[in-house]
Length: 331
Length: 307
Image (cartoon, rainbow over all chains, first blue to last red):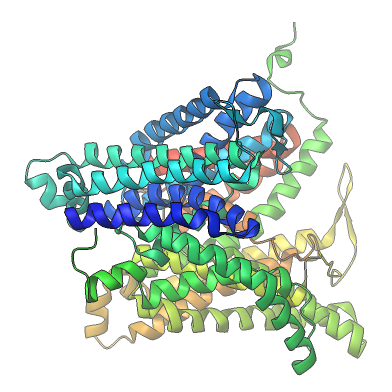
């Protein structure tokens, strides 16, 4: 327990200490990564600990994002209350989806969540009068303030993202190390046995799904206010796949895996689309004489390759493998 | 007061409705073929192939490459290029699918959740490779022949009617193979009980590779047939994947008869609904319907046995 508290404290302290050292470019990146890591942390509670693989978490992210951004844009609410509305929207979505989708298991659960997310995405496109559809809308810098702090300022933005991330990391660590957290893991390993021991798996799964949805929604709402943009692409299938990939890479069922996976994947994609892919495109053209006009923009290729390699060779992810081989106490 | 005034939409002109139904029939035919591929793969292998739409897209893109090569470089007539595309493109796609099965799915031991994650990865790999080498443009493929059939109300493309005929013929062939041949018997035996089948000397690995190849090949044939009507584009796999999912789930996962009934139902209603309502709204309702069917009636609307 002490080791776990020290480890999480150290990670948060390191993120604080890193702030003055970062260049402006990495500053913005890391703020974005922390917000996305909140999303991944929420996803991990459901997928990594409870063993429920959702293919539709983008709907919760989008519920938070649009719940918050539309209150600011249409009702001209200030950031604080709008953020809370966003989180409540994700909570409601989590409750509804939970009661319906948790009636299914395995592949059924995956497809049901996928279909609900697709319906939400299409709904956002359908009401493009308010949501501006794929194009999305920006939130003016002047309204992005909370308690007198300008959220578009890089330092404020960094520490706002860090605050939200810390809250979610600590909450996730507390939950998974509590008695309820042990039940979640037990459900992942053997649901029938959990039922036999007198627990109601449905209640625990619903709790995990709602907590997961709330974290995803808070990430979405935070993204809208910190980066001043809401768009339908955040509700598309891709944004349901991303947290799965981040968690798989970092290590499902480890508290710090989501952050690690998000950091690595973010920089891999960033570096690849800036350096590797254009270089590769040039090489393919000069060496083999094949024209590859789209290679420079095909960064999703990496996402595909990473998914296949992870599921084939490292289903436990980085921290999960580390835990299995060297550090058995890793939470 | 006319009763029709109470309808929640304006009733279109009968000719328009008939045209919608014809378009719907063409869509239903190709959809049934594509969905049949997904359904066979799920039915026999218990694998939900999320990359199915990309095999479809690959069929269309390969058809463009083949027809383009034949007419542009060799200077052959359009029908020759199309005929070659109809044979070669599905074969390439099927070979690729068999390789995918051997390299990825088999190694995952066909675990349902792991194979879904893997096929999502394969989806992105195929789609992005198509973007890489084919580019982001939509490109047309010339129809192999061009004549119009004069119907009482309007003239209609003879090619589209042939697509319907070809799709029906292919589905009959697939049904005959599954129900009447030894290969079909082996496939059904594998579906029924994989381990017992293996104990009786059925090469289960080869059956799985073959089934996966057949499923992907059916999607590719559907795409080659549709590509003179719709253009080939690297993102064209999304819609058929979603529609195939809808069809396969409404029809009952793994039930071939249900798949056919649902494909005809969805294809026709899509053709008609899109003349009445906005397509986005129709899609929202369809996806919600699928989710509800999976939640409350997982055996499908038409299927009898549990999935």
